Length: 100
Image 1 (cartoon, rainbow, N blue to C red):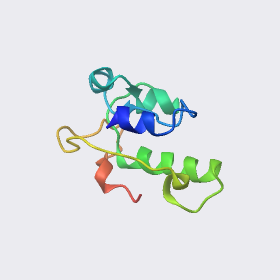
Image 2 (cartoon, rainbow, N blue to C red; image 1 turned 135 degrees about the vertical axis):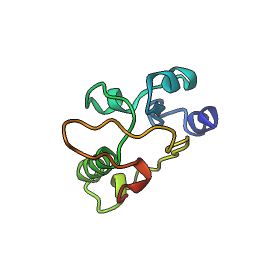
Image 3 (cartoon, one colour; image 1 turned 30 degrees about the horizontal axis):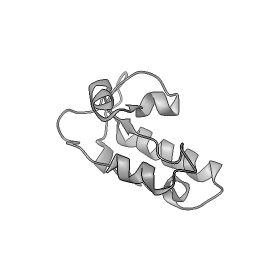
Image 4 (cartoon, one colour; image 1 turned 90 degrees about the vertical axis):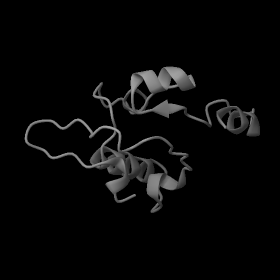
């Protein structure tokens, strides 16, 4: 799937970002963690709050009311394997519990 998406428009080599929620998953797909891609730290696993924030940033940067600024996402994986990491007293939400 990644190769097909990258081949779709070779004139835009950065049009497809390959990211994963953990370092091991990122290595296996030849990508980087979503946290590294978005420059938001090193805690792995993606909680719903961060997913929503990334959507808001995308919408803001692209001046759009659409989730993620209208960017298309292909999101796969076992999102219920482990709970997201929470800091302090916060109770984490799973990615699929996000608003977007």
